[in-house]
Length: 258
Length: 258
Image (cartoon, rainbow over all chains, first blue to last red; front, side, top):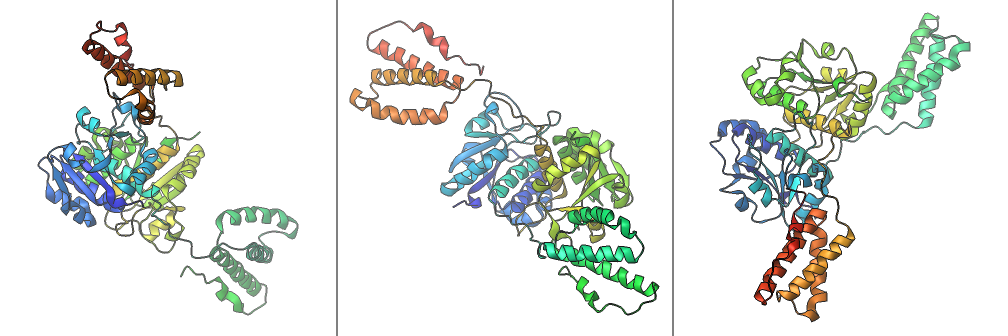
């Protein structure tokens, strides 16, 4: 089974504590937890902790190594990131292309995603340790992403591909055609009664309104709101026209939103 | 035609100069340039410039507004980002789902992508100004991304959907079957000559090597490297076995990589 715990984020020679912290937060956002630093330079750990925000645990649990081969020694697949063209780097694929293979690799082993230092990226020696090369799509003018941004894109693609995210669901069911037709009929009558359109223009005008409502009102809640509007306007029109009595059914416009 | 210049990144009430700078860099990475700040608080502009890196021009060209409606007044579509559930927020879709519609929106008008303040996100009033809501996939435990990270994911999805990125192409053409078979034949002979395998085991052993080479050697360059290895080993074996003469064709192993 796919196991996000088997994905290790490896930062080679990070310079800046803030970036390391931002990496931790990005990992937490995307369900990763295994962070390894290779020969970190003097990191400002206050900055790191501040940028890690709620993901300080990932920062605290980081491992540190002297060189890249040690940091990935127990990994079966090692993917390096690069924004530079050149020897070996031409075999690069995008994070979206790699994501399914990275997930597949977590079933039976560990997968390392390796990111270079802020100023210089990964050296050729370090890239040689990587089985595969990741190239994040970016413009030719500014190809090089901040290291925490690069981690985020890769982690986001892996997390998205893992299909662990389920979007918040619409609670109100889609409106049925019958309900929509009832609403349209109410609006037609109301628009005639308030003098918005003449009877001979009503069919044509209602086509326009059907188009607007068709795009905008998708759920039962949406349609009930519009029915409430029609009912209320109808009541006002009736009062003006000398009739009386607030319609009893006004509560119909209450929705499941509340 | 799709026009990335028609996409505006709007930051509502940003607190931290470093984040604003990181937003600029992310925009530069993904081909965007129009940045608007709404009621920025006292930003550390040195930090902003440092994090913007090569994208300082985007920072310099930013616009500032007092309130969100002014910042998006000339935009036909306004998409707000949120990590919180709640009223209106349930209609959220992912950046990948929105990307094609965002691009479509740039053909005839401006599209604003709105991001909330670091500490509090977008208010309900601000979300009400947005036609649509973006929700970036993230874990339930740490749903809230850093603002520059959120900008990057949205910009990355739009840029990727715009298909402006063309990956670095493999210069060496894929190896033909004929070339691969020639290489396999050379290896078979060489492995016999150096005493790696007995003739009666050769067929079986070559199946294993075909599997390995089949996965690894895809291009003409790859195959020529392996042919060079076979040729050289053959030469050494011949010297040991009493024959002589370095084969003239050793230059064959030169590749187009160099």
